[in-house]
Amino acid sequence: MRSLFLLILVVIFYYFLKSIFTSNKNKNELSGNRKEPERIDDMVKDPFCETYVPKSTALSSLFGGDRFYFCSEDCLEKFKKKNSV
Ligand SMILES: [Zn+2]
Image 1 (cartoon, rainbow, N blue to C red):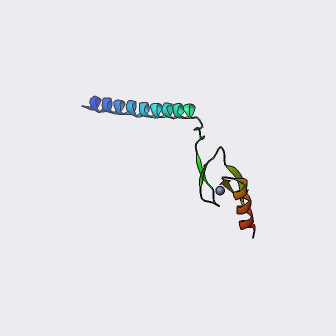
Image 2 (cartoon, rainbow, N blue to C red):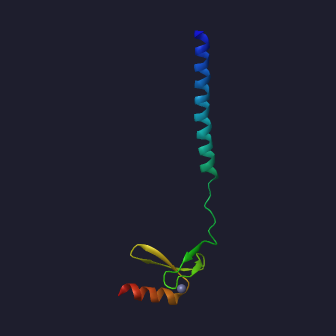
Image 3 (spheres, protein in one colour):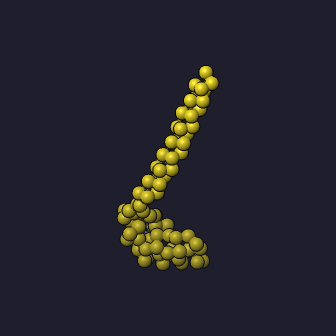
């Protein structure tokens, strides 16, 4: 009876170790396979005219530590003027 209890403990311990080992392995695999997602068609909002433009073609500018994206230089300039007053 006591040896059976010990056997169960050993089995639990075995599965416990196995789960730790496999979870670490999965973590390593995930971090190893992690790649920067392609953001070609990431849409950003023009805060001036409120249209959505692809990030790749949008004009970006920093205002007070925040990055804003614009559909055109015209919008960028107008936004600058509006926010500098
Ligand atoms: Zn615009």
